[in-house]
Image 1 (cartoon, one colour):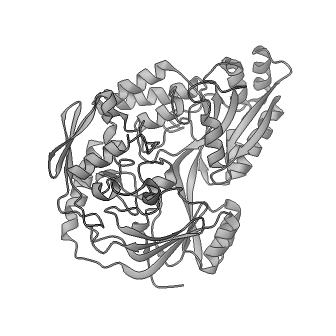
Image 2 (tube, one colour; image 1 turned 135 degrees about the vertical axis):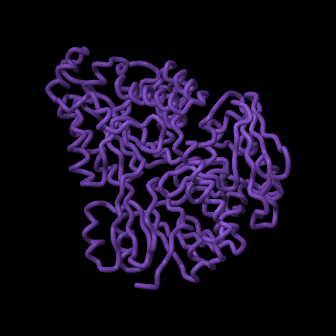
Image 3 (tube, helix red, strand yellow; image 1 turned 180 degrees about the horizontal axis):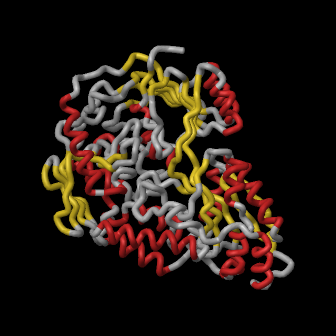
Amino acid sequence: MKRLIAVAAVVLLSVASYAWAAPKDATLTMGFKSETPTHDPHTESSQLSNMTNRWVMQTIMHRTPKGELIHLLAKSHKWVTPKILEFTLRPGIKFTNGEDMDAHAVKYSMERVFDKKLKSRQRRRMRVISKAKGGKVEVVSKYVVRFHLAYPDVGFVNRLGNVGVIIPPKYYSSKPLRYLATHPVGSGPYILKKWARDDHRVYEANPNFWDPRYPKVKHLVVKVIPEAGARVAALIKGEVDVVFNVPPAMWDRVNKSGVAKVVSKPSIRIFRLGFYNKWGGVLDNKKLREAVARAVDRKTLRESVLKGSAEDASVVLHPWTEGYRSPKDYPYPYEYNPALSKKLLAEAGYPNGIDIELMANTNHLKTREAGQVLAGMLRKANIRVKLVQLSPRSFRNSFRKHRKKPGKGFKPFLFFNSFGGGGGDSDLQLGSIFGCRGSWSGWCDKKIEKMIDQASANQDYKKRDEIFSSIAKKGSDDLSVVPLYRLHATFGLRNRVDWDPRVDERIMAWEIGLTGSN
């Protein structure tokens, strides 16, 4: 982490040497499957909301297209003590309504996450500065702010590159929440000009944006096109310039069109088969969980359904995160063996098999098809699953209704879901997946939670990496989940688009340029 910050400092200090380059007076149009439910940066925490909010608003830290953690609204930071983190901010930056981006704005923005009226999904990620837990944000001077942490947490710097968007205090404290959800103001490269819900949004370049390199295009339009075939058709017709998640079956159509191409590269989103075992029941039996794992042909799942658009994954961390180990360094321990799967079922007390629900989130590329294939593999091993495929919102509501206590009629179930972790924060990612109160956890292991706390508090990066690696391996070894694959980020781009897509699934619109027309 230290090395990446140092590199970033050199990059950002060189900004002043750039001559002002006005954005190209053209329109970049993108086709999205869905849209963010709100442009309020402190309520949602999804990949989509974090991404689109960043077009208008900014964070203290940032990730480059290659995943390096750099300073953004901050010039530098230092640890005063293991529990006091100090940032020096960039002077002279203005929000688009004229307010100053300064330490007071940082304090207001960070504390706003804990406003009960917001019901923010980000509170747990920011809990280390919660007043209720003993943390606080201190304004030292106009451009110096200190975070007094409730406990040592080195990963907090990582988190500030993903959440903790900085906004103008006067504006946000004077408007109703409903209005703010659709009228965002920030210091970012774009300004939201129009929002036709479930149809399209229109953005214009911020004429006073502080970094002269961005945005590269003056006008930005986002169209909502739910169906993949319709998005691809719009790309080929020239109605949109960029689409995300082009299905492999449509790659040839795009590449042979002469006007567009598919770009696919390994990304960060890891899919897993999980066991909702938090409240006990049949899934307490490790032999039963191993029977499930041995029934899944992970390689065939990748190659038959994803067809070259996924990588093997043996743990739930990705290459950006501390503690990551590749499948070569840590091969998945439970290889496909349907005969052994049936034997283990019998040893677990289910010689005639078992009936159980498999709940699947259908939000990403080929997830509906992957869920069906997964269910078929399990059924062949006498694990008779009832497949329930849900939209992202329905999946979240169904999954989380048992988060604090088992709901009425609760039964343990299997689930098929993914986690991106674009912030590169291992304690967040592992806590979300394995923690007793994790947002996407069906598991509860107090030992894992203690290990996460130990890693978070440790300022020795080598030791942190070792602990995080142990946690990730333990999750696979103990069959808390079955890691299945790491999805590629797959984009369809018109030939006039000048952009090398990021590896974190995020379309940071200000980075995209256009060259002429086609």
